[in-house]
Length: 237
Image 1 (tube, rainbow, N blue to C red):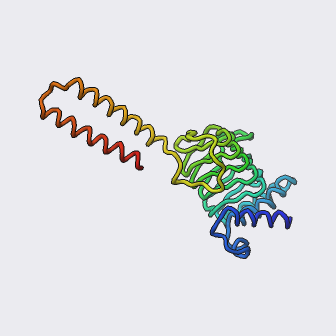
Image 2: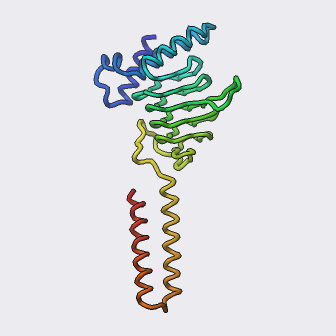
Image 3: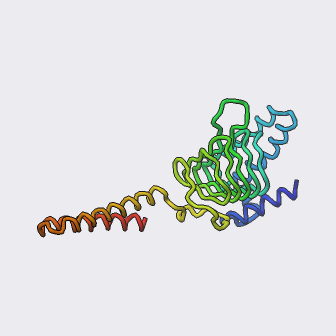
């Protein structure tokens, strides 16, 4: 038990640069508290004391604002950063070295008493406010961007962003934290492609209409300049 406690404390120091002392971790980290409560409630749940396990998890939810069902299976070196609003459902399975940020939901999509919550692989990182729904699998070393809604399984070593979540990158370098500002934006990329195609079409029209009067050509030039400015805005954003 004490070795597991030490391991959880070391994990927080490794994944949160704001951690400054063991005392601070023990008393000021709701994610750490929620995990301690879950270890006990899960033990009660799996030893036919389901009401006591559920009651303890309910108390933990009140104290930490993190809801982990006692039936959920949580691996080692698991860390919830900040933690407020995190929900982990009954049949969810979380691997080792997983990092969750605040507001993450591992939710179910079925009313049947069966596997209905996600399975999260080892070393996965799920960003702030992301929602993962259904009996899907998030592969090892996967990254889910902040605010994403994931309803389909994610292959290992992939990055997913958007609503619904789409794979935008594979075989990325393994990282400890999730740099939200550096994630690809599939919507902006799609708009950028459309703008470039429109610019090409406008240039072709300009060539075809080369015999038009100077005023009309000047208007085309002005429109092309505006289009180029807009395209550069997306490149920069």
